[in-house]
Length: 348
Image 1: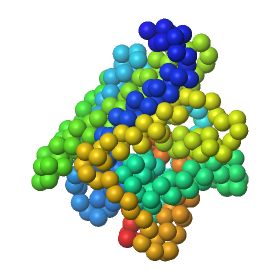
Image 2: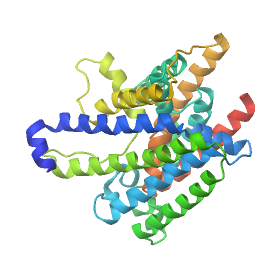
Image 3: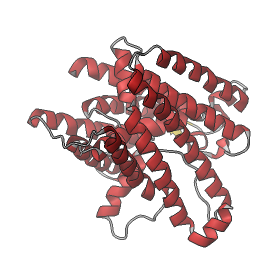
Image 4: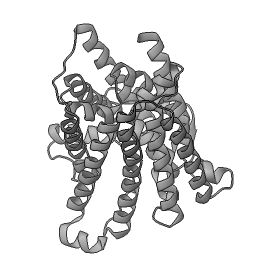
């Protein structure tokens, strides 16, 4: 079926359409559920296991269950994905996670959350998102690239089965599915202990739905790679590289080729806008003062450098990578959470 669609519409159009549809679902569900790793980490750092953590854990659990089931049934070749098959840097993951965690507290949102807030009229998020995209590009090929290269060179690890927590201990995807179910039980226990019944309904639907969009991105990418006439890299849901790509699409001539990322960002904006309409939450918000603006700008730069060092944002590095049971994802989870908690205590 995918081959027929490629022949009819072409790979770029089909990839962009897939990104648009998945982005629409993610934007709507993330907006309505308030899905946010920053909020979850701060909640834990302040000694409370509340709804923000529960919603985030629902998303992670759903992603782990979906992706492990996909791998178990042959719908995803985990050994070939970047998180397992590409060289990585432990120093980059740890330092990048700390920088990213600090930056997302300073900007009050990870890149995905900034896109959602932008769609609802938050001008602080809009400017922070633009600076974040600039910092990502600067970390790849610009003035921050030498610093990124130096940090990444301190401690590198080779690709291979040892990069998968399951393979490293001799377990298969059935065990990964069981881990996902255990995470789901914990998330359900947290959710049922909350009192905010009105928000809890969207928390259930949105949290689980976000996790399923992560699964859908992996499934779509793998199906396209198998049907494509040209080699395609299998990849999951991520918002750091697409943000930088859209920036270059505006600044560069000729622009980058159309692909999944071309549809993902507009789709997420549109989905979050619909979510804002449903919740009557569309309103313009700006900076309170110059100090506040400097805080957001500095946080966006830290987050951009951190995203390149740890090869992904809070969605891409943690949920997308964590669903694979990739070692790099869980190392990044710890460093991002630590960076966020420490920054919250020092600043907020």
